[in-house]
Image 1 (cartoon, helix red, strand yellow):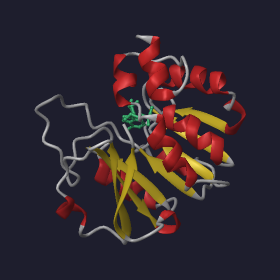
Image 2: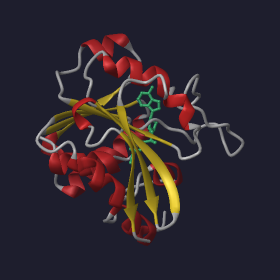
Image 3: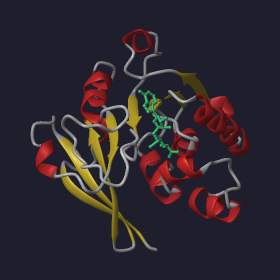
Image 4: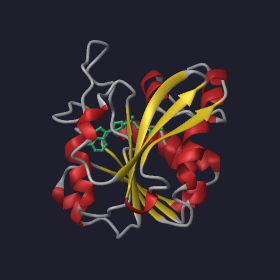
Length: 204
Ligand SMILES: C[S@@+](CC[C@H](N)C(=O)[O-])C[C@H]1O[C@@H](n2cnc3c(N)ncnc32)[C@H](O)[C@@H]1O
């Protein structure tokens, strides 16, 4: 991977491969999301190469992060060490939908969910309900509501927002890089700053 591209997107010469680079969220968004988790015990899923984990660890009290793919987790552990925040992160390898794993998690105040929506290729039809993200976003959200009501869920910009109408009260934030709508972040529970649709803009 080109180190300059990694540094520009994530802030340092972290470890990433093509896949974890593409999946990783730009630091200008992750630092923004992390502000809402200040001082909290946080569950994160899914870790990827740890770019949201690092931002969360800089504001949260403690982060427990789950990743199914050992090679992604290995990158994340090394990246958290490089960022100097390993002591505030516990890494768990496993499937977040596994009920035994969920039952063994420590209590948390809030959760950050970033399922993988790139898994089905360029022809993928993006949807929230009956989602084929990995893990499925709708199933994941319901599972995590067993643990906490305060959740942030990252979703792609192409989703029809009518799919969200049956969800509990939330803030739906449209996140822009320049003029480009890059993603949605849905906030629930105590993470809501202002219910309804809001926008967050990063200058290009
Ligand atoms: C979009 S990436 C996360 C990127 C990360 N937020 C970042 O900024 O670097 C999604 C991750 O979810 C992992 N994943 C997929 N299914 C999972 C599951 N059932 N349990 C835990 N992790 C899973 C994938 O291996 C992938 O690393």
